[in-house]
Image 1 (cartoon, rainbow, N blue to C red):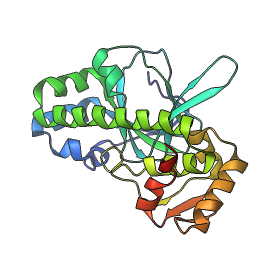
Image 2: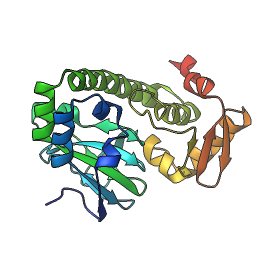
Image 3: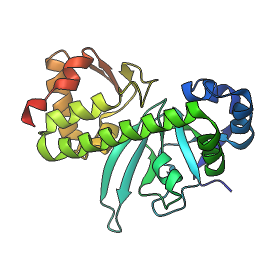
Image 4: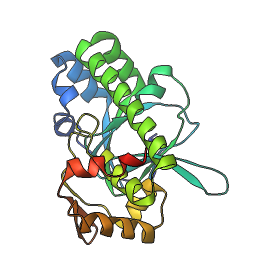
Length: 236
């Protein structure tokens, strides 16, 4: 039984995994193992991909769409750790330690999700040097992202938090498939920043006025990624 709720359809995984750099670096026998055991599922916005405190049965990737990693308490309040755009993989830490997942995973947009079983992940980790190198890089980059997220949330004003949340989606190692034109709404960006849609709108307008962004309906085009990455960091 799938851990993913609100599944729209299952997809043929072979062409989807072929687009992943780590998959292309595997030996043929290891690629066959991935394709024989893994799957791809298309889900609606709002679908729960994985639950906090549930077994970490899968290493997860995003082919299309946008997911968020967050914690929800019993009163409905939430804390978002990260957004995961196309090309992103996550959850390796919990899978490696065979521990319960530390956060909820929810689809912000309709998404096509790739699921690699924990047993397959561990088999690759033990037998494939290219895969081990990839996972080590993932762990290092993810730790840097989480540290930056905590720092930004505590020290930056709202405009800078929005700028940095957008910039994080363009990490070339964690999210190699992110396009400079993001199909994301102000409400969806609010989910990632913890800000209201109205406050996100104000921040985006301020960034657009400085020619870092171009705004359209449910779309943000980044015009100057380097300036966006540096915006507000003087506050730290």
